Length: 73
Image: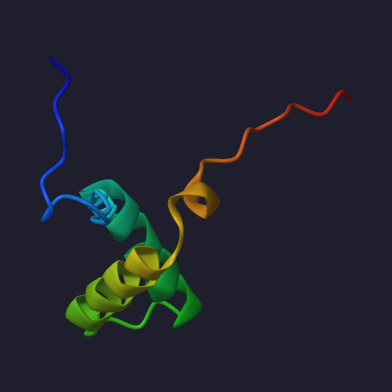
């Protein structure tokens, strides 16, 4: 006998888990921010939080690693 949906299940969308960037992705972006600031020390926490915020706002597709294609000499 097939299962039927209850009234509370009808119309509900299954919640997709929000993508969380990896520790490595955040660390890399924080380092890039550090470089953009001219390598001045003292803002590690702010760099990390900014990197985390930026990565959480971007769709996952845009964070794919790009292929490195060798150029023939």
